[in-house]
Image (tube, rainbow, N blue to C red):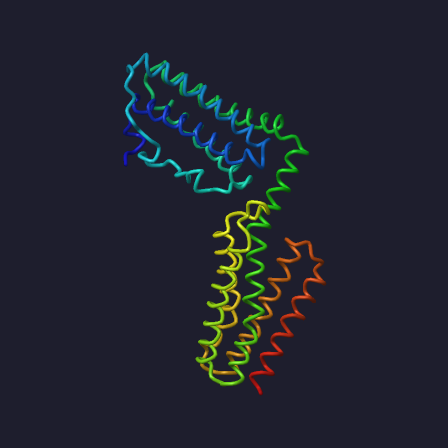
Length: 318
């Protein structure tokens, strides 16, 4: 990996050409990933890619006149100081806010690159081009704002943001909440039944661990196999299943870990405190993302948790 200060003017131009090509392809990949659900944003990124193509052509003209036809392969990942951007295909399904922030970061980084490159250049033509492109990046940011206004009027943006929020709830919050509720509530009975039946914290921990992991595997498979997401818009089944399974296990492990404390009643007190926190988190998520009134969410979750907790104590004490 080389330092930016070690690059020749020929290498700087080659790097600038590669950067413009890569940025244009990133914008086109984003546009393609958004086209089905967010056509307004997709059109905006397509036009931003066209702007990058114009910059690339200007760079190619100057490079050809100065250094000929061959362009050495120099990429930003070969130079220290550049930000590593994750490929768009690894970000699917795309999040609107994430790709908008990515575009802003790319524009800022490119502007900084052209400013530094222009300051180092001793060739008048190259220095002028790089300075002009730095100014163009500032204008590009303004143009991006104009494109947003043209392609994303307030009502379209609100609709796209609402759709993005709904997709996030369907693909992440719902499976995660289902898992957290199942793990936190359904494992209460076996954990506390084992605790009162054995009065042994280690044995209780093993029962809770087995119940949590088993419930996580079961819920993960159930969520993944419930639908493939093609009609419901709930996203990839493996991702949903993974989220649901992990949250189920986490919900059960939370009130299981206190039983690593050797003293039985101390472990019991800590576990009950963890249960209260878990139920409060579930109530908050239901209020925040599922539009459930806070009092109603709290009472419903508390009632269910208390019912299962009481069953566990009754069975364990018997």
